[in-house]
Length: 258
Image (cartoon, rainbow, N blue to C red; front, side):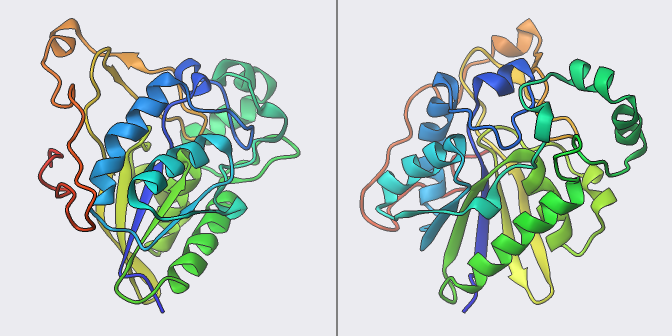
């Protein structure tokens, strides 16, 4: 058995995302904005009719997954292997604080080198390999022709995507950081998976910001978008209508700009 489609969904926003603090495997819940993001995106992902929903067991991912689970009636399966990179003693720190503690890490980021996140944390390769292995196992345990939906974290998912495509760790820099509640679609294909869509998202209602994710996976403070952009009308100010019947959800391509 192998899923024909795998949808990878990053969790919604937390207060630590908004303030640029390293979360790692710290258990930080969604904030109100993150809950709203998940409720808005869930009807779109329901259109994929997932046969299974698996999730990191950290609360911010589980909260995101359970909103989709309630909508689709699919039980959420917690999987510790999908957790974010372990940043060890850096949990709760900002980039500036970490760079002060470890100047070598700042240089490694500039050069695209892998680096262990504190003496007790993981390297990016270790975290990405862990998540990729978990996704491979989950996909193989999903019935043929069905969709697996996995909820995880920005940095470890990005590295896992890179590795699943058969690329080396260093190539993860070719991909943008995953936005909160953005989703990626992959197709298992033998030894390497194919990338069908990356970092898809729904523009949020005001206030708007341009999310950024640092190479360490912590997420930096969002940069404000210009007043001109904030004045644009939101495309998702009203809830997306959802029909309860399986297969009756809006098409993923009909409500999301390409």
